[in-house]
Image 1: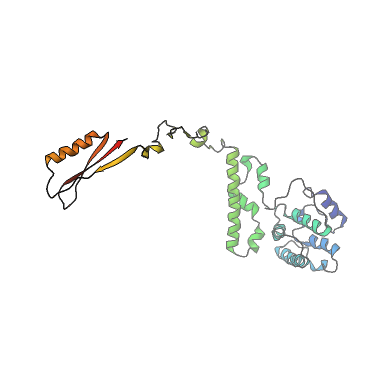
Image 2 (image 1 turned 135 degrees about the vertical axis):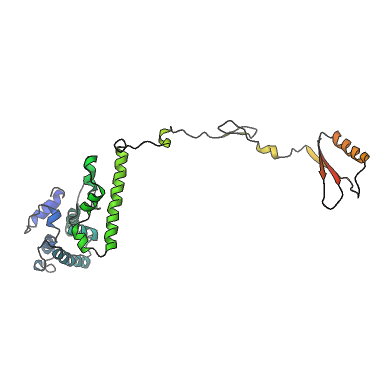
Length: 285
């Protein structure tokens, strides 16, 4: 009862129910008290004698099937997950159900300092325990998967998906524990965590366009590949003949190349033809 807000407690006491609410988790699981509350607001539509105040799973399913039909006809915003959690006595499910009924029937909001978690598991309780007393994977499945769910499950795959969801939540909870106390689990820091964090140095370009890297090496300037405007190229063509050039012609070509400031001598040989020579010179004016 301490989990319910004060205005909700006063509302339940004002209804004068046949059963005093002591533990909402067990008192609302069969749906009989829910039908009794609705009968105060809809006496013509809810007949209390149609509901069974039993604790068996068959009695619970019959009562909640009638209630679910009534909620759909009235367009009441009662979640299906909340009803299933109340049937299987999940943690905080009955409290959420009573608060939704209070808001729907009285048109009054409930005030809470912290919003409720509607996952209906025991992670909030486990987080309050010391590390050595927290549940293992098998205990988490036992605490969060009720026997009534195993009896009323539609098929095996549905139960397997529920079990896998519980295990994944447990693994996430274990990962958070390892981050909270790494010494307990013997976790050693990685090289990336040991290495001090340093900001990367930004590259700086000088006026000549030379980029200097972190290691101090200089890359070739971008403008070095461009030909200056005052340099011109002159091509000297040599007439090729069917035989080798005489020595006098070769000396004349070499003399012309030697007189230039920059000169390159490039022999060209074509397959299937006789040997010929061409020279290209570049000079500055």
